[in-house]
Image 1: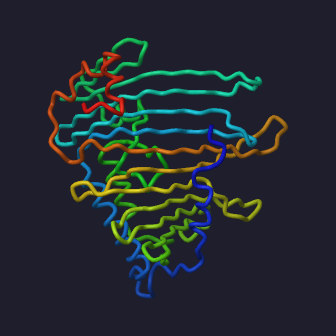
Image 2: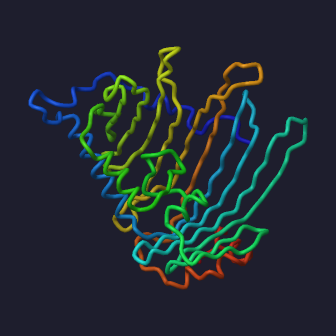
Amino acid sequence: MRQVSAIATFVATLGICTLCSQPWASADGEASPETLEAVSFFEAYRGNLLAIDSFDVLMSETDSFMSEGRVTREVSRKTRLLLDSANDARLFAQSTEIEEDNGKPNERILGAGWRAAVMHLGKVTEREFPGNIEEFASLPEFAFNRSFTLPEIRLIGIYPFPPPNMGNNWVENQLDVMATARPGYSVTESGKDGVYIAHDFSKVSEEGDTKREWVFSVDGLVVKSYRLTIYNKVTKRWVPHNQELIKWESIGGVFVPVSISGEQRVASRKKDGTIGINFRLYDVEFDWRSVNQEMDPTRFDSQLVVNLENVRNLVSAEASD
């Protein structure tokens, strides 16, 4: 069981000046050069992410939840996700294993489950094992995505993993917002091959209390690291809430993520009334089977998600289909 964060040195990695922001606009109301520079990075990132319009990927994720210095829950997931935007088709298959500490020495609760779904030609078929087959003549894209908490690959680096998935229009809107000149951006260099960009909401509104920070790779213009911090008005300190390290590779001229290491901190009230900090430590690996290649319609056959053996095969690392 993992006892320490995979990104314990992350804060040190981003330990560079965040107080060097310039005014958002010049005296004549034009966006400042620094704002335009930040926007140019997000425009390039947006273009790369929206270019990912079909894929087949197997994601392997491990999550460890820690409270008061001990691991209380561990979750392992394997998720196969196929997307064919041109034909509005998608397939999802997932296996989950859970191990929980129930507070008793040398005793842990184990659980496992399987679930899968496919959307093709407007029809949706889904199943959890054990369980009944559910079929829908049609289902809105956002409802299909949300019912299974499908990660939105095209918002990695913009939101913590798994990024919310509300449909294509919403995804494009979120990326448009990031690539819009607005108050609060600052830009500095980060080492030889990176650029640090921060967006401080306190520069936008007196009520602003969050800051988002990115380090972009100069090479691929992709997000190498992401951090969200929240301002604690009591202690008057910025407190890390979520942070990620992301690695990428180029496939067919498009950059796709190959691994993510992240940490989330969540405050919770204890029984004695004091506030404690719980941690979620997670690692995700991506095994890309195809990117932006034409897909055979038979890969979205409903029988692939209603038979447990087929679902097992889909999430197997050795499987080719």
